[in-house]
Amino acid sequence: MTKPTLLKRLISFLKPTLTPKLLARQLRQPRGKLGEAVAKKMNESNAFLYNFVFDAMQIRDNQTILEIGFGNGMFFNKLFSMAENLKISGIDFSGAMFKTALKNNEEAIISDILDLRLGDCDVLPFDNESFDKVFCINVAYFWENPMDNLMEIHRVLKPGGKFYTGIRDKESMKKMPFTEFGFTMYDEEDWRTQLDRNLFKFEETLLTEEPPIEFTGEYFSPKSLCIVAQKPL
Image 1: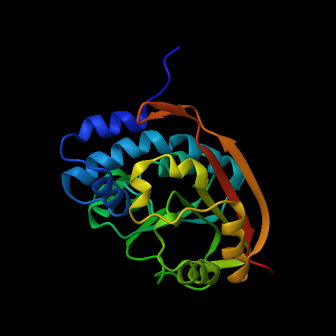
Image 2: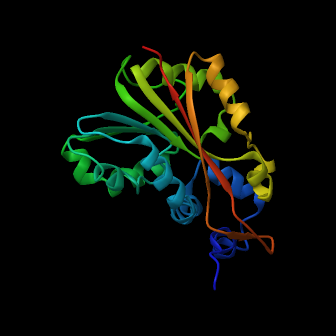
């Protein structure tokens, strides 16, 4: 049985220019042709976690949803397919990814069901109490001051709205060499502490084990979390 080797293929695809430090920089804020290539490969490695978080979100008709860090925007169609009459927004601070996502989602944007913004999520360009659900996937590692980001997410959520954080756990992340460059890694308790400090009510943590991947010659199955919190009524 052949096991998937997404991370190994990513490194091989971009050699010889890619080092762990450069990969970390591109994962944080993709730029140029190299960033576009990284984003496409990350779509493959993140697809399992996206599906896991989408299932956890229990999306209903007529909801308003915000994604923080949408990359090249290739998962919005999946999200729209899960319920009727959704209004989805997104923000990303990579100019390259913003432009690519606009092209990838032109029809939804023209139809006024998708609103994409370029900017930082510590100052969200949305009104108070705008969203039923906010989510981010493999993004929280890059927040230099999580309090600023979480306060803004709290602000734009409706009372009773929910925030979904999709991350790989600390031990899994440590097995990837690029994470020593600018990544802040979390386990469940670490992130619950951040949520508590910013007025969120912890609801549950869902745990999954991803299909095996190979990195530096060894196979391992990353453990991933979807941590669900609510803005109290």
